[in-house]
Image 1 (tube, rainbow, N blue to C red):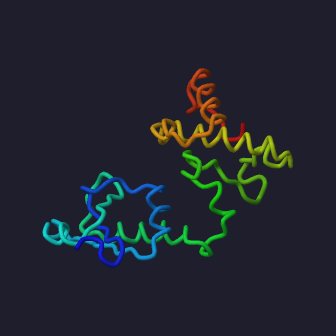
Image 2 (cartoon, rainbow, N blue to C red; image 1 turned 30 degrees about the vertical axis):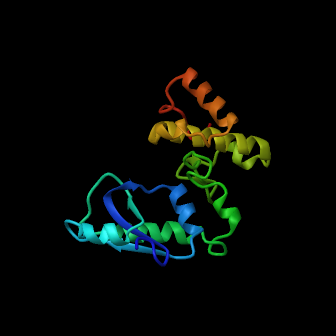
Length: 176
């Protein structure tokens, strides 16, 4: 009986970790139902009879699954073709297994903090390399376990090895 009419996902801290890859998988589905428990969850017989997946948005407990459901809906909906341009989705956190590089807008100088010169250079290859470097540095600082992913490019792996050889990434200036 489980799964009749599409995937039925129970949002629970006991589920497998919800990731960008899972969001991409769900965005390809025709029908997804999110089931939210409250306080202690739901009756195990409902899980056994209807639930096809159990997902957790993190290692913490909420009073109910509604907030988790909102996170899943938002992260999946933006991946449905036509919701956001494909170009906007190309260089986001997790798209290449790394966290996203820093972004800068106008003005060019904000309270003495300047946009890095390389971003103003118009040199696309140097900008691409700077973005990759900053993505790797940010990933090393905040989510180093992501650097073990099979989805990293060889260029990213080599750059990460080089950064590790050079030492601490915490002291690096964002505008390098």
